[in-house]
Length: 374
Image 1 (cartoon, helix red, strand yellow):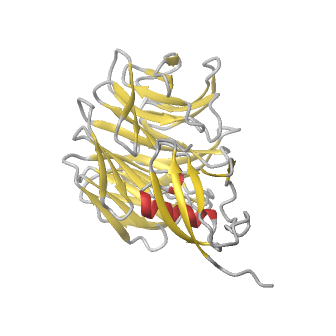
Image 2 (image 1 turned 45 degrees about the vertical axis):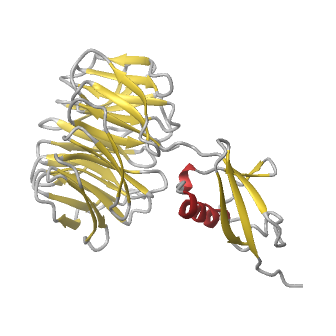
């Protein structure tokens, strides 16, 4: 006998007692149910962990029929809501960890010293890495706010940014006034260096961590081999390069510069694939979406934009800041965008351009924003 597709009313409950009712079909997948819960209750798919009969529903492509729901009885699911966290870095000398769902500031990470130029999470979300104008790079416990480790030797001037490699928290990559440095976080030893003629403003790893791209005030971005330290390609952006990032498959790099455009480059030939033109002032950051089809940019013109990586057309513009937007980031499930601004606020947006939250609490302009990927 053929399986019939039957309508099922799912009762969704949270540990805090909130309850909702979501109509579904037995042919709906777990991923589709998460989208419906998002539509009815507001929890984005990345926040959800669904549990049925004390067992987590981990396979996104499994249908209700696959997990044994074949009749029209009601189904009750427990939803364990994971907070979406983001971190901001500010000229006020602090970084802050926020719940991007509620706007609550969870931790303030502060040392005596200059402005914090960047802040990112480790791959598992347990640590925050900050770079500061007091010539230190610090690793913090994201939960309790304790400073776990400080690096201040081996730098040539203040670090402009610092990141962890993908899936690793035992090494860090730092951009400063002389070069980009890979440092062993366990002992502080410099493992590799990549030099430009002028300040390196930002750095990024490829997804396999075999390559690094650096952005410099010398008007170029460079792609480097991590193992050998060899420069594999120089990308002549033509103006101070503020940001550079790989596409997920490593076939492209996007650069953001002080000539109002972002450029997408082929990493094999060094050829420009697209010029993203539409900002009215310097472009300060640019990142790819997880599928490589879109690019998110942040600009001194007080806006952020989402672009088609293939056509170069602007899809959405995020307006509402009263100062330059210094950084922009996608949430892990890419249903949200966060922006950091010189107006002292960060904003959380839906990807259709609507402002969902404004995060206030910093006492000066913001330099960076990043989501936890877990």
